[in-house]
Image (tube, rainbow, N blue to C red; front, side, top):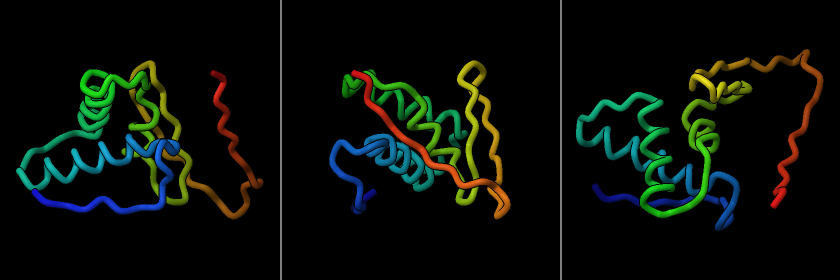
Length: 103
């Protein structure tokens, strides 16, 4: 498999490593005829970052990369690894997200 990674995420940007890892796993499994579940991709991407690279990360970045869908909010329950897509609507009140690094 040969490929090019191109995008506008900053180095070390929010979910940049999760984005690269999950898309690589998806592409690699597809070209090799390997069926991976969404949870399988999340688990393998998490293991690659934690166990191989040694980065202290959780699974939310990978889960958001795998489960997210345009014009939907994604609700992830980390207790049982379930998720739910919540469609946005023109009648929804506007919302904003803030990401903080607490050290």
